[in-house]
Length: 147
Image (cartoon, rainbow, N blue to C red; front, side, top):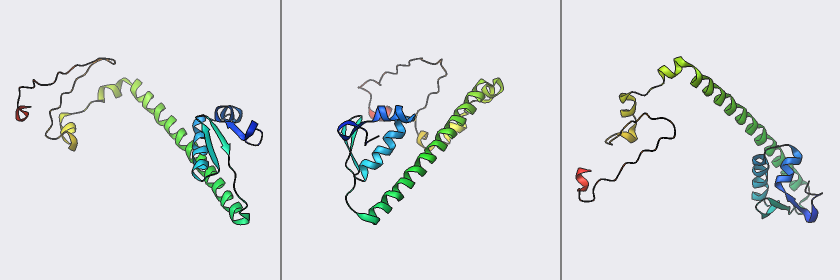
């Protein structure tokens, strides 16, 4: 794609569309290539190949190693995406189950066991989605000891 790009500048949106991959994957790869100095960003969605020097076999072997690493990272990323999709599906199924909804609660003891809540005032409120709650600051006249 870079070789075919006009003036050697590649539009990453067009590349993602042409390759049929998510833009996020293209950006992951370009960030690695930019980090090792093979490309440079010309603008938000455009990169230009800087290439590599005449490093011979050592450089070719490093490029091969990095290409393998990119392939491994891409495969790992796909596995993580699939796992997240399964987790989201499981969560949606659980939330639709009436028995799960009856058991989905947090006890006072659960909340007290969280270290960051100790010695804090905590108010639990059950409200419909989208509810806005306004809590005014205590009067400025109060001393900090009584807050």
